[in-house]
Length: 556
Image (cartoon, one colour):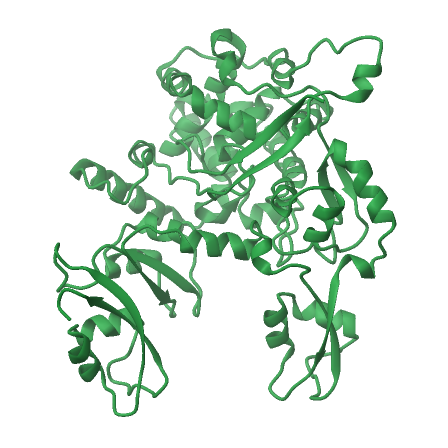
């Protein structure tokens, strides 16, 4: 049977990835974003690009802070031949979804420099277009169906390319997440559930409906002007409304091209129009667009209750990574106990899955342990230990309040496999991101009240955006006390020279130890030990305390 392969190459890609819904981002965040872009531009001008990605300079000049992408690659095999179609008397007239889109493109494309610049970039990077459009394979047919059902312009199908490079795991400034790049507030505004178990912003089906709902609202708000609606999707309806009002007051044209908008938004709409123009008018570039079968290749299945993703994957003859790649909305090792109870599966795997599901009771869909409550236990402590929530433990054991009694037994749902088996869960994605080497030495910084990425980047003398990226975050994200950040350094001490050979070790404090004595022992500075371990030099060390020490082995 002929198949296509959905290759989900989650790497950082070009400046086509933007971020929307800036109306929900505070003025302080927007100021920080401007400072970050300015910092990157200054680094580029100085030639100091060691901590920058290839496209950072280009994007910073556009006023864009790049979208972060996980690096994991996940392949999901999908059928290209639909048995139902093959059995029919006539072959479908259009076999490629992109051709179906091409036939319905109607936006007028002006011949101006802003569009020409974006068109030139896309046409000069066919390998990028191949990767991105291939990534759309499991989802494109469903997205096109939803757009057509609403009688909306098919040009909107290019928006996920501009927003996230069709990556449902994409994350960027303002805490925008998912293929359509919703920030939390706008996601909630358009019905996207966000919680510990599940984030609807990354659920491709739910987020697509939410994005189209928002675009419909914007189009009505701007009297049917789609360019204004798209600009508002990126920079916020308030900003676009003010720009239109300002131009009216000055007697200027209020078309998109005449509005005073942020640099990113001025490039954002031309990117979408450039993609539409390439699709419609440049057939010589068609080979750059990965062909996608014009029939369903995936199907939504209602599971009915919470299920362990490892068990669901076994039932569907998929790996956990493949299942999670198709269902990126689920943050943890199982679906959300309170719903949604849906899984997107390759259409050829649906019958196998539903047959196995029918033979599995709700209780069999999760793994359970019996925990004897000990002195010192609390619901929060047990929830953290077993990677679940306090509410779940309460609900399963019919507990009211937070009181548990030593000696009692609690039943707790736990993951079927070890947590590292669920490599695309939120926890494992973060662990993978933080463990990926970006320097010679790694230190861990525990966030204290008042910390910001901006301040920490200056304290440790590292690139601000790189620091955020090492921790799977965006530069303007808030930090929370107790949160652990990894920091990669090539130089960990002022004593370090180009001939130094640095090694890290963990030292256990003994009775009578002091920072000065330990520093003398390893020939390091007291200030360095304090910085590596976030110590208050006025406080005494405690026996058994663990300290990270970086030693120059050429000096010991």
